[in-house]
Length: 342
Image (cartoon, rainbow, N blue to C red; front, side, top):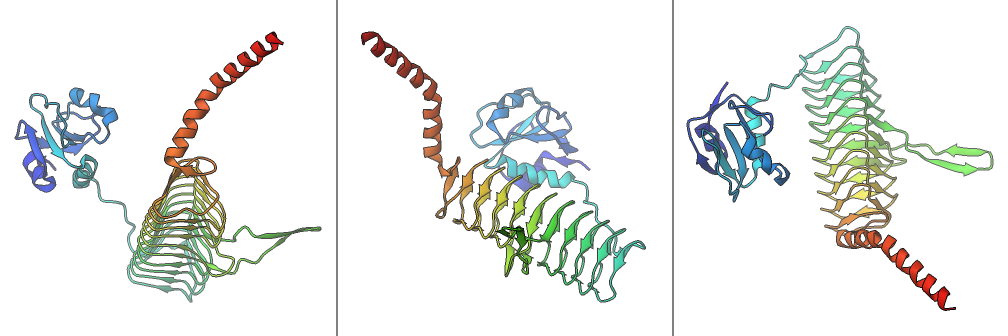
């Protein structure tokens, strides 16, 4: 299916600069696009590619000063990335969705309650007293433990484990290899070794949460580990027992959050960040990559480093560290000159 420049402009708004009458049959990056494709400039790093791109339509930022080539059009837009995403959806193939039904090799306990249009894939296991809402999908090899409750439209991709008594609201998506509700890491050291502390709580995941692959979210020691509405969690994230993550947070790959920490609404944790146990991170905070937070942070904090400090202070510290070798040379030179005087 093709779409004209005029159709796309009507959908996106913005300002057309250059030639008209273009038809596109897809989208592509600036360096890979041909004359049948639309592309976009979402990062100044790639400005040089605009002049060389063969795309017939390019979405560029407002204020972009270069002119399009012959037989090329720019759409100037306040947010090229958002606009490109809208166009991308016109050409995206429909996502795979299994048909409702229960595979012959699946196990479904007779006490389980299944809503309408549920799919249970090959070798999936649904244990006693499970409740699955309308339209839930449990793909091949996934395990849903006793007493789990899942709302409408939830989806477990292949080989997901959801342990006993976990509670999901509507439209929770979990990708392959993730484990929800394993025991929290709780032990009492003693002379004879480490005594395990029973982990009797649950995991609660609210609506419209998406969790990537190979994530581990531990059940609470008591009460609940709680992931609130709209939060998105990347691959390889570890969330310990009794953690509370607020609404609409971004948790990027390899983040580790220790027990009983609390993350405020709309916060962003960059890759490999670590949050110490019992720490409270205020709402709308940004935690830089590889940062370690060891004390409470107020709302709208922006921190980086180990231990975490405000971003401006972190940059000052880094600038000072780069001067240390020169300072050491100067100190050694001064010491040498003083020794010579003696």
